[in-house]
Amino acid sequence: MASVSMSMIINASAEKVWQTVSDFNGLGKFVAAVTKSSMEGSGVGALRTLTLPDGAEIVEKLESFEEQAKELRYSIVVSGPLPVEGYIATMKVKELGENRCEFQWSSTFEPKGASEEEAKKAIEDVYSMGFEGLKKLYGG
Image (tube, rainbow, N blue to C red; front, side):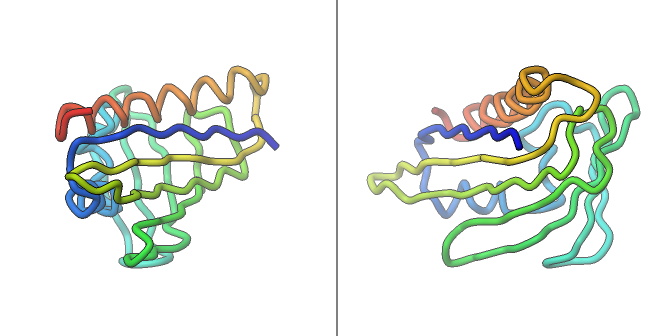
């Protein structure tokens, strides 16, 4: 089992950042590779379909949502171009005070059709894109 874990400090309140990352249908607001997002259902069990610039689609399922802890978990149901299977990820926002917070994004998965290094790099690239998007929204 491979894993990726990344975090960054954001110069905004945990509440503001949580509003952005907790919108399960709003990943495109901060991940540039998502050109369209649609959702079936709501709350835990909801499915989102993410469309990439080349038209490829990734389907993800909301596994858990903890408003108080500012944490959500999701899985990938259809990995599209991502070389992974059995992917489970956690997004968490931690209050640091003084209008600062830490955003953590981590996952575990099995590489599929690629080496572990290649699969990890693909996921790290997505997370880095998300962090860049959050920096643009809130400053880093």
